[in-house]
Amino acid sequence: VSLPATARVARAIISIAKDSGKMTKEGMLLPKLTQAEIGKISDSPRETVNRAFSELRDKGLILPTETKQVLIPNVDNLTAWIKSAVED
Image 1 (cartoon, rainbow, N blue to C red):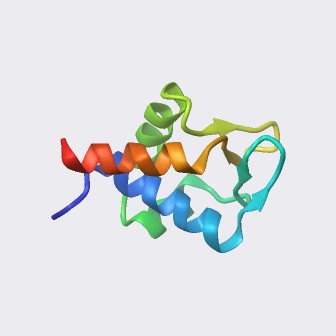
Image 2 (cartoon, rainbow, N blue to C red; image 1 turned 135 degrees about the vertical axis):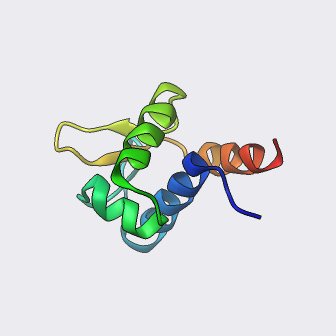
Image 3 (cartoon, rainbow, N blue to C red; image 1 turned 90 degrees about the vertical axis):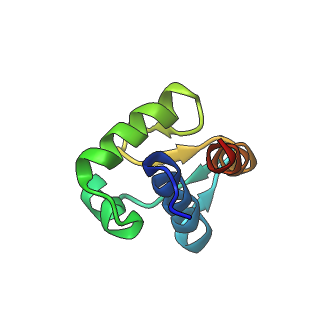
């Protein structure tokens, strides 16, 4: 079963967070990566990553930081969203 593009990107974000993220009081902070780098990890073009980021940001599942990093305020919420996206 292939995942919807946004779910693929979200799954890659969680994988990056587990491997090299840093827990802060605001949530899980990812290392600085470009959208193209996240695209390679998620097997998605950069444009798809850009759209996925917009969708996830609009849902409050990820937040951009001033240092151009990605913050996941609640990893469990993002994981639950991926599961619901797959079931739809």
